[in-house]
Image (tube, rainbow, N blue to C red):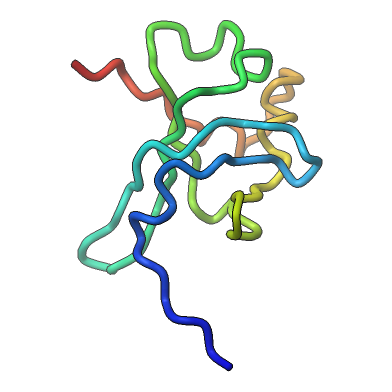
Length: 104
């Protein structure tokens, strides 16, 4: 039996965890490439402040590349790059995390 495709908006509100089970944040919005008809990033809010302490000040969230997503279900699992980001490693992929300015 084939599962019916889900609406992209069904991702909004889902919690995001690293592959190691650490809470990262909650999906607030989706970043799209309309020409390629592809999801390119997940805008996260309600962040785990321990992971992003001092890194996203003045921002309400971050955008992580969609290619980091490993599984989508009741929650979304992403690579553990976020934890390496927290550890202060100069991981090239960790630098792809984009701070989202506060929206008004």
